Amino acid sequence: MRLSTDERRDEARALDTIIAAVAAGMTVFDTAHAYGRNEVELGHNERMLAGALRTCGAQDRARIVTKGGMTRTGGAWVPDGRAKTIIADCEASLAALDGLAIDLYVLHAPDPRTPWRTSVRTLARLLDEGMVRSIGVSNVNRSQIDEAVEVAGISAVENALSVRDDRAIRGGVVDRCAELGIAFIAHSPLGGARRAADLARHEVLSRIAAAHDVTAGAVALAWLLALAPHVIAVAGARHPGTARSAAAAAALRLTVADHAALGRAFGKPRPARPARRPALQQGSDVVLIMGIPGAGKSRHAEEYVARGYVRLNRDERGGSLREIARALDEQLAAGVRRIVLDNTYLTRAARSHVVDTADRRAVPVQCTWLDTPLAQAQVNLVERMLERVGSLPGPDELRALVRREPGLLTPTAQMRTLRELEPPATDEGFTALQHVRFERTLSSRLTKAGVFVAASALNRPDLGRALAASDPTVPHLIFDWRPGGAAGDLADAAAHLGTVVSGAIACAVCPHGGGPPRCWCRPPLPGLPLEFSRGHGIDIARSTLIGATPAHRTLAGALGAVYVGV
Image 1 (cartoon, rainbow, N blue to C red):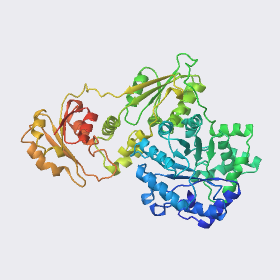
Image 2: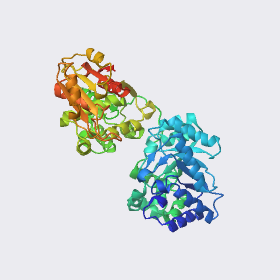
Image 3: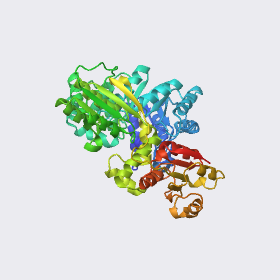
Image 4: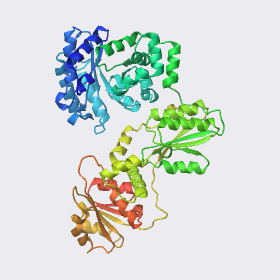
């Protein structure tokens, strides 16, 4: 990749690197249509690879893996899994490779805006039409693999895996590929360009490398290749020497002592495990509460704390989920036997640290999954933010706030967690799995009602009917999204509404621009109604929202308000 994406790339050296890889015995070459500096250079890496293979006469024996479904607008990496994009990318790759066959065509990454099955069906179409010899997917989780194989004949999965990144193992991806007879291609097998140079400075790697007269990178690759027969590594060499070093890893045989030392240094590969039997220690219990941010984990954890559980929460303690797992081990070693962990734990890999730690101490782990819809979680997050800071921050203030306030997020960051969520399963090692669906309850503290009126509903002919269905004496809020606007823009609308209702009337506007939401005040996000309700002591679940679009109906449902459409 970096042979084409580096700002200071050296094309002559890149050619020498590919030729050196061929001379060292490499036959599989991984490229992508998106490997270039920006959208203008799409196909650069493929053209360079094809030219180099022809230069050294290796075009007939080389196996080419390329990828599509990724755009480079402005130099960014943005997945595009639409059928028309995947087909166009494949056609462009065939043109760039100039007659060389595509042995494996891989979807670069899932596109959250496109149904996963749509993207995979398009891969199947490429295969059926003979454009490629086999197909695969990349940067996926276990459930996405299972869904993909239902739709198409997937031959390979390409995910990150290295001595420093074992998420593909802990997340069950490597094992699932073995079960399905699918090749697992490890990209970034040296930890990525930024971390590869650090390998030579690692004491254990450098010591083993010296004993075998190879590089530390070769040792790291050999460790990876020894994991299982279906594991293949694609090292991103940028120099002829690193290409030869990577090729040497295929012939390197690490000793039992080498593997033991690497296991102590980086952690042992986590084997697949069946559902766990009840643990031997009676009266011991670890409870893992998981869900997207805003799911309500803290409230559930507090109930356990009231029952005598010790709480381990990353927002309170700081650090990583691995460090929380180490804290769990310390607590169990000290004799604490009832512990609750309420962290996001979106993936199998993240949860595996808790299961493994408890397993070593013969303590059972129960998982409680708070399956809270995104819209409801957004309400919870905004309520938390209002409790802490008292008002809705603008985009710049919000970015600064989330950096210093644990538990607060931007809307796009929270949406991303939903895309990353892997639902838990008993085969992860849980003794029990509880699936809790969210229910919003009436407040026992707040009894006042309110009415929220979307500005776009004010000119609808049915507005009078909608207002008649609500209480005219309660506080009313007119809300809208007007980029560059202000609440005063709704003054005339408020004056007109005042002729119909007797309750206090307020206006609120989100003035921020388009694109992905950078604030919580942009409808249909719940910020404006929640801020108004907080200021007037209103229980939204006792209130009414008058709207004119499906988005307004969704907002009312998330708030728990009665929806009246016009």
